[in-house]
Each structure stands twice: as C-alpha cells, then as structure tokens.
Length: 342
Image (cartoon, rainbow, N blue to C red; front, top):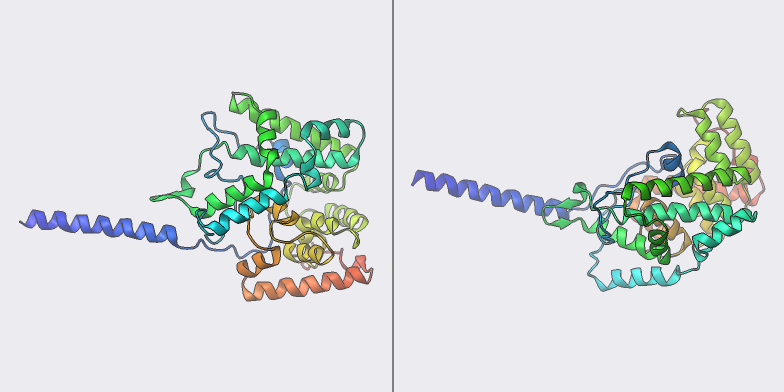
C-alpha cells in the first residue's frame, strides 16, 4: 500500500511538471532592453568571414518551422491559425510581389546589369543574395530551442511565415539558383556569390560597402579614432534629408557617428520624411527579411508594443532632434562623435 502511495505521488509530480512546461510555453518571451543592433553587415560579412550558418545536409524545406539566422526574442504573436494572421500574410505577399526594386528583378537580370556597369544593380544584387541567405534558412530543421514539449513556439512559426511571405518569388528563385544536392557545396556557392557581390559593390564605391570595409579595418570595438573619423566623413557625405533611404543606411552605425544614437530614432525620422513604414510596407519587409524582426502593424506600432515608456521617450526625443537638424540643414550637428567621446 505504501509503495502504491509513493507511485501515486510520483505520477502527480510528473503531471505537475508537464503542466508547468505547458504554461511556460504559453508565456510571452522577454523583450531585449537594448535599443541598438549589433554592427554586422548581413550575409555578406558572414560570407567574407567564413562563418555563415551551414545548411544541414539532411534538411528539407520546412517553411513554417525554420528559424531565421538572426532571429531576436520578442513577445509571442498570434497563432497562425487565426484569420487575421492569414490575412496579414496574404497582404504581405500581395504588396511585395515585385514592388521592391531589389526584388522586382531576377538575380540573373541584376547580375547582367551589374556587369554592364549599373551601380544600382550592384547594390540590389548584393541585397538579393542576402535575401537568398534568409530563403535557404528555410531548408534547415527547427533548432531545439524553438521546440517545446508541446510543439514549435508560435512566435517563431509566425515570424518565419512572415519572412517567407515577404520574400515571395525570391525564395523559390534562390532555391533554384543554389540547388546543389550537397548542402555544404550549396552554402559555399552562395557565400562565394555574396563575396563577389560585396567586392563589386566596393569597387564601384557603393556607400554601404565602403562603410563596412572601413569598419572592418578597426577589428576592435569601439573602433579606433582613425576609423571613426572615416565613418563620420563618409556618413556626412551621404546623409541627405531628401532621401530617407540614407537615414536607414546610417541607422546601424548611429551609435558610432552621432549623439543621436538609437537606430529606432533614425528609422522613425526616415518614416517622417516619406519612407514606407506602414503595415507590410517596405521597412517591415526589410527588417523581417534581413534580421528576422517581423511584425504585423506599422513600425511605430511595433515599437510602442516593444519599448518601455522610458525607452519610447528617449526615441521620440532623438527623433524630434534629428528631424529638426535635418530640416534646418545642420548635418554637422547630426554627424559627430558619440557621447562617450569615441
């Protein structure tokens, strides 16, 4: 009788543990407190350093479950079984099927134009190949940290579905171009193509390629004064209040080139100057595809749900300051040493 009682207690303990795991899976994931992003040039830098994530040899396409290479933690989103979610994904695919210049042309077309000396095509080819890195990530099996006792975490499932919707036809194109049966060879081919695209962009003086090349020279963080000086000179030469894209290009470097040092403030200022930051807009696509930061509403709505009141207050103050300086033509007041003196 005593032995039966012990077994009964053990069974109850196991049931309590399973219930606890189920509740933990349902709890929202904690938000990162930092408002900065690690300074790394997407897939191009990974290809140059030889540290790109390898594609598992035995993997098969599992679009709903695979984790993007640089996914960030965020609150659990809606289940992908809800009608609103399906509508969001459908809209994302519809809005961005060919409307983004980098996505509209095929990789073969961009390669042809870049060889003919089209500077815009050189950058767009590098961006398209970086998107291929995200697309091929769908071929990887879901990592253990994204799978709980009761199945995949819904946040990662939805995030990856949004990413594939934004990629649209590009995902299938990438899989068709980089289709070697040997996954390791396939990955090396992509890395080599990205390396060549980066080299070509640098050769034609592409601004972003030059910024990352200068930053690579430092090899330390924070970079030495000589590297910071070069970064600020390049930034000052390329910052243009009439071109919101220039603010988005500089956002990842903001804490090195400016006292207005949060990426969010630079992106919001670009939105204020006319960049497409609406739900399923161009900024939403770029952030989701490049970094796995995927959301359903506008960029501002996303930040309001993500940042603390104090963080939002800081971002809003920097946003207003940046817009004031740009509208008054005071670019030297925007591009200067960081608050800590570099």
